[in-house]
Image (cartoon, rainbow over all chains, first blue to last red):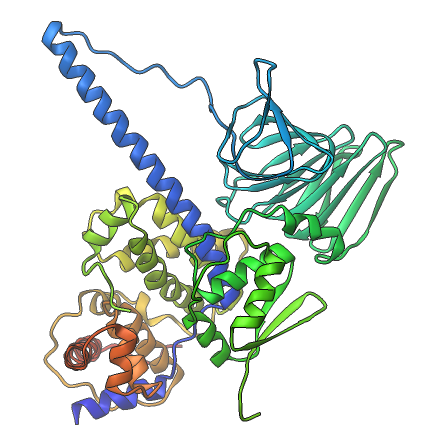
Amino acid sequence: MKERLIENALRAAGRRPPPSEEATQRAYQTAREEWQRVVRRQTRGRRWLGMTGLLAASVLAVALIIAFWPAAPGPRIVAEVVRTQGVSNYRGRGHTTEVVRVRDAVPPGAVIETAPQGRLALRLTAGHSLRLDHATRIVAVSPREFRLEYGRIYVDSGDAAAGESVRIDTTLAAISDIGTQFQVSSSSAALRVQVRDGAVTLSGAEANSAVAVATGEFAELTADRRLTRGATDTFGTEWAWVAAAAPELDARERRLDRILAWVCRELGFRLRYADARTREMAVEVRLDGSLEGLSPQESLEVLQRVTNFSYRQNAGVLTLETLDANR
Amino acid sequence: MQPQFENDADLVAALLAGVPAAFEQYFHGSYPRLFRFALRRLGRPELAEEIAQEAIIKGLRRLSDFRGEAALLTWLCTICRSEIAMRRRRHPEPEPLQAVLEDDPGVRAALELLADGPAEPEAMAHRAETIALVQSVLDFLPAPYGDALEWKYVDGLTVAELAVRLGRTEKATESLLTRARDAFRRAASDLFAEGVELVRP
């Protein structure tokens, strides 16, 4: 009888409403990055405590003098190189030019330039992904401030902590993100900003006011200060270079739903599951083997071949549906 | 999946030590529950998702402050309440029509302590407030009791299917279901023993 009452109560209540898959993926990625930052801070703190303990112990043996660590003069790195294609160079404060390699640390003041066939992806210490297209030069002013001297860059703040905004200065205007994916093309003749997701503000384009550019919009400012605004696609050929320069997916990732979230983020698609059953199955499917070295588009093509789902892409929406033998 | 860290103190220690399984347990154990906690107060799923994400992240930033005096979920709900309050200050909105029962001090204490109760639960009417209360109880039970009860009685999984999902033997799963039912019964008993009025204006 007791169990019957509980059973009735639970059946009457029904299933607890879950958060959406998209929100869950987004929260997971953001939280994971924050957790990694927390762990790094913990590790540095423990190392610092260990070193001061050792120092105090050795000093006490000689004299009763306490040493203090000097305050850090400023951040020593602003970004880490996570992917390169072709050749890219950087010039540090010492004015020597070096070839950029994966895992290189970028110090403040570094000038980074990609060759005509080169591309580069950076992970900023603030958490953003910043990518350089062919023939692009930037100056890494600080962890959250970069100057785009010419060329084209893409910024994705998806993994950055809330409130960690990045500012991109150009000769014509400055762009600040508000939780976004956007690209900026800059030359002496014009500046063009396209927003895939979120919003940016453009400062210096109009006197005494900042211009907001939101999802699916572009703003173009010419050297003679003419500002044009309009709608733009958030996926397709104009964004193809972004996916080509994307940092690789973690080779250990096997969960289909997370792989799909990465693919869709990089290709600018919205992911939609045809029904709840498809969503549940996507969470449970684990890939046998890795997609290491594959681009997002190549990864999607592999998934279409090896998984038991149909993938329909239309107007920027990727719909996943189970393949049912009885249909 | 069976939780690897059985108590909150071990989970937090493992999180701070950078153990990946700890993060998985923290996120997947907390995010959906915080979402529902926020949803019951705000009534808007997208906003609740946003608030729950903020609470999860702030919880990570303040992990070193967690003392274990309350359950980790309770602690995270406190952060979530604060986020909701800040949001309401910035964007005043009409209060949801249905009062949130778990904000009643007696109800909150019952959910948090899950102490033994003397009485059997009475037959429950099928009302929206009761549903919310039952779902709150499930969320506040220690993991994976809430999930196990939902999978068994709402989704209709067999014990064998549950065992696979939980990564346990069938015997261990039966034992877990017994403990889960006992925990649910005690929580519900306490709520009725407190004389909580299930219908609020």
